[in-house]
Image (cartoon, rainbow, N blue to C red; front, side, top):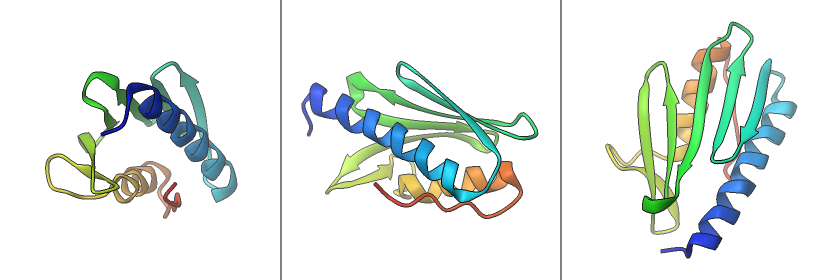
Length: 107
């Protein structure tokens, strides 16, 4: 388990990484980072919300397809529901919003 400071530092780096990767991927997304929340908006207005839940040290994704919670397990951010990886889910929801494949590399 990370300390709270480590979790906050990691999640800030994660948000910046996602923004950088989206700038490079060619899909049309606007990003806004405000506190614990990174809002990603597709060209058609669809929003994907990535946020951190500090008390549980979880990363959350909210998208049209649903809400996903991820916890750090053996060095990987895995869904608390089905074990899928954070970046696999993020790429799926971004691709659905963009109407094309989106590939955000793992941090």
